[in-house]
Image (cartoon, rainbow, N blue to C red; front, side, top):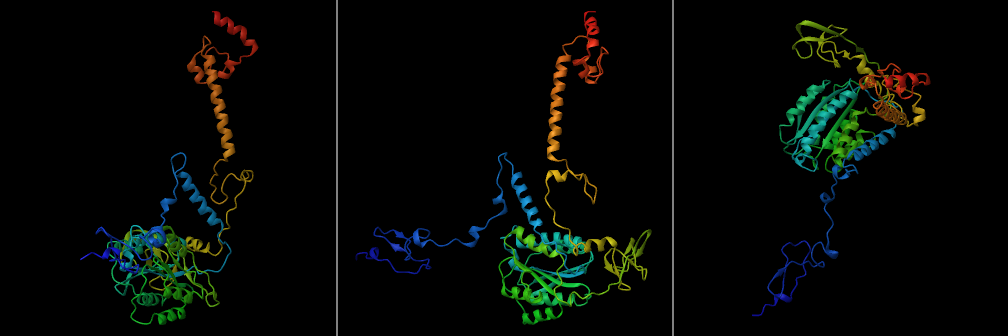
Length: 456
């Protein structure tokens, strides 16, 4: 029986992977009904999203000298220009902050679109974030919660000591992400942790969310309404894509402002979104901006050779601080006195928090003519670097002096009765000059004596 399959091409769909065409020679050739082989002509399919990923090292261009210093300088200048556009308008902010940091510990964090993985990169950035947070907000409190296996996991309690949080994050690196996140359970835990926060401070929740789903036991919208009632603000940093429930969460808890929800495009953008929350939030409503008095204590440090129990950890320590109200001993500041509840801080902590209310004006670029008016910084008295024009002029004078010194040595070497070691020391052996320059151009009265000494 004749093989009639060679003249037949089935009208098939483009998504069927098992389709083929049998040619007259018995060879099988793949075919598409849309008009040809994949990737050729009109049948070409668009690129996948991962094929257009750009890495930061692709922007580095090697300079003419074989180095990348020019590219690095351009990146630094771009950062400076961005800081020059920063808004420095003084606004009212909450400088005493109480924040809960919620981390996604689900299997979605094992993805490698952020190197090395989302999980490891988040742990590294969070350690840096804790240090920067307390550097910018020294009288604030921070706690960390994780989302794993549909539950909320407490990583570290509310504390003003950054070492407690950094130690907890380092232990977290040894674990593996697993399960699904539960946004509702994490928000309920954060709400319970912020329940006893005083009214004079802010209540904030920052979520690092890498999944596209949430395994919740109940209605998460009720939890969002409870957060609005308790005046808790929520910010979200997404690592995958925008999620509708996160948009609603940020919009409702921030008085209609949805700018607190951002999705990271790459590692640098993730770092920028995360560290942008170190600045205290703006008070938008009249209830938040209502003035209130806060009683604080400035304790004195004690240094003793004998160890004593502290009131905060019940551990034997030699140093510490004494509460000015009840004389209880605490290990570190800032903190609340465990005995009387008085807020204990140092004056330096208050000054570092106060600069958020009145930020410095942006730097203004001036000409070198204007730069000559100041020789040092007005605040720290550090000397400014030398102006390039003056530095170039000084180098030119040094080169001219060096050339002149070379010609002097060549001319003095031909004169008899001269000691070259003495010339190097700025002296002349015959006693008619005190330097090499005086030997080259001697006074007229010294010429006969020089000739006489030359012949004798």
